[in-house]
Image (cartoon, rainbow, N blue to C red; front, side, top):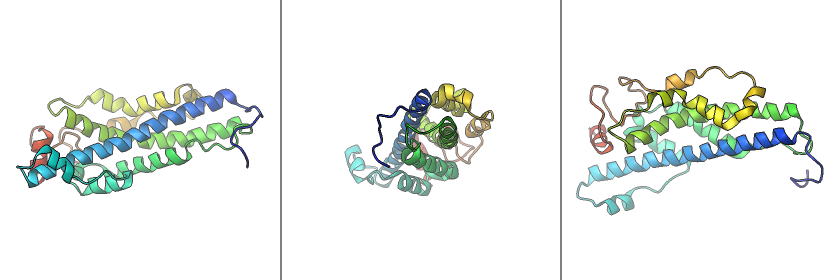
Length: 224
C-alpha cells in the first residue's frame, strides 16, 4: 500500500467515476440526515424551554438549549423527548448506522488502478443497501421537518411514498441497470404514516384523535 493515486491507469475508469458520483450523492444525503435530526431535536428543546418558562425570551431559550450532539447522541436525546416517543427509532438508528458506513466506508474500494468490474459492483451493492436504510430514516425525519415548517399543510403523500425510489434513482443513476433488481419500494408505502397511525406520526401531535397542530401546541400537549 502506498499512494492513493498512481501513474497506472484504472482498469474501469467510467465505472469508477459512476461509483464515486454515487458515493458523493449518498454522502450529501447522509450529512443532510444528521442535520435534520439535530434540527428536530433543537426545535423540541426550544418548545420544552418555552413551556418550562413561558416568560423566557427567544434568545434566552436558544441560550438555554443543549448544544448539538453527534448523530448517536442526537437520536438518544430525541428518543427521550416527547416528540421522539412517536417516532420509529429503530429505523432512525438503522439510518444512523448507514450514515456511518457511507461516511467511513462508502468509497473504500481499494486501489483504483487495480480494482475490477466485479469488485466495483459488489461494493455498489453494499452502498445501495446502506442508502436504502438511510432513505427510510430520512423519510421519517423529513416528514417531521415538514410538519414543523408547514404545520397547516398535509404531508405530501405521493412524494413520501416514492421517496426511497427517488433516492435510489438519484444516487445510482445508470448504475441501477448493472445491479441486482431492487424490490419495488414497499418501504416507501410503509414510511407514510396514516392519519391514525401513532407509531411514528410526522404530524407533530401526541394524540391521534386530535387535529394537526402547530409545533408549539404539540409541545404543550406532549408535556401533559
